[in-house]
Length: 125
Image (cartoon, rainbow, N blue to C red; front, side):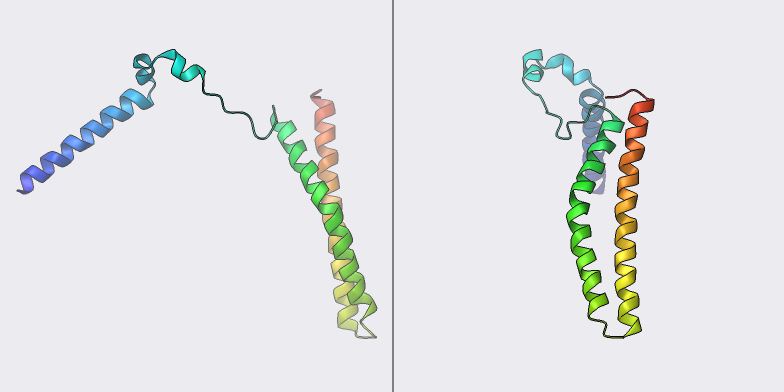
């Protein structure tokens, strides 16, 4: 009984290995008609044709999201600052919120500038 299970397992393994070697390696394309592959097309969802264009679109998105968030977070930091009523801990928290928000926006803007410099240097438009 155990011998039959081992034999069946070996048979399944060899069939799977054959399938992998034949179809996954590209030899399976020889038996399929070419019309089956000519109708399949996958559009590029990123619309980026190079790595620089991909980073450019990512930084554009980050900048698009960061500007409204920066405004909102600065208002929150200002709220902490105004409602501190002399509490040094709240004033410190408000200052940190505003400082780190501005630093984050500058980092995103700096990355956008670096991408533009790379585009100019590599003459990719």
